[in-house]
Amino acid sequence: MAASNQQEGKKCSKRWIKLNVGGTHFLTTKTTLSRDPKSFLARLIMEDPELPTDKDEQGAYMIDRDPKYFGPILNYLRHGKLIIDAGLSDEGVLEEAEFYNITELIHLVKDRIKHHHQKNQKTSTKHVYRVIQYHEDELTQMVSSLPDGWRFEQLISVGSNYQYGAEDQAEFLCVVSRDITDSEEQGAAAQSERAKALQERGSRM
Image (cartoon, rainbow, N blue to C red; front, side, top):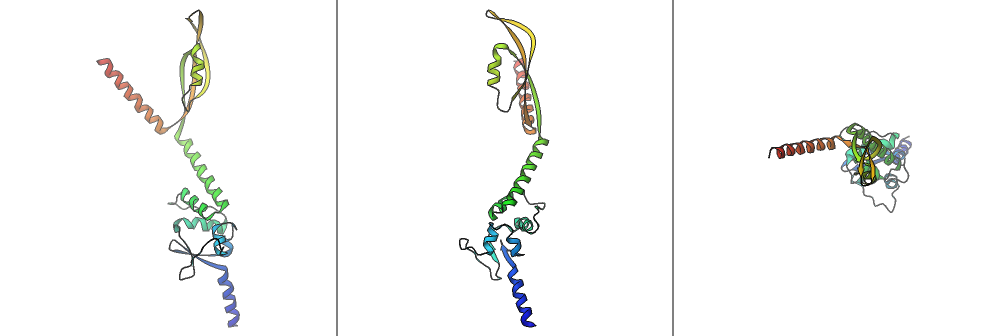
């Protein structure tokens, strides 16, 4: 009976793996660490000859990484879900996922970062329009020399003509637009205020 228990204990010990990540110990199974066969962790427990390994005095595989960010990595391998606790950055988890070479997790974190970036963009940008009056002979140059970020939207004839050489030239209103962030809008407002102050100072001289 004792021999049977001892044999069962050896089988259990072979299923469980100890990891020492940056001085913090984790206990998990070979099945969990083998979820992605091409990952660093799967190669580690298989003792890949191309991947040098060291163990501490407790027999735990030693990994020189931040243990705070190992939690989301290990939990993903356990249940296939990405969970990032408050206080941890998505970029930090991505860095670890790339180090451990866990392909599906890398995709999940990148999608999460992209989603957050798009969400922040929607709340911090505004679509602004500007209407500028141009003579007919200036339109081609105007369209070809729009500043970065500005897009041509619409051209409206104002229905008036003026004499230019021997030809009558029409006048148009050109509508352009661009996306502007809150910080850019504040900078433009400040610049406008400075220009207004300089104009008023010049008029008093």
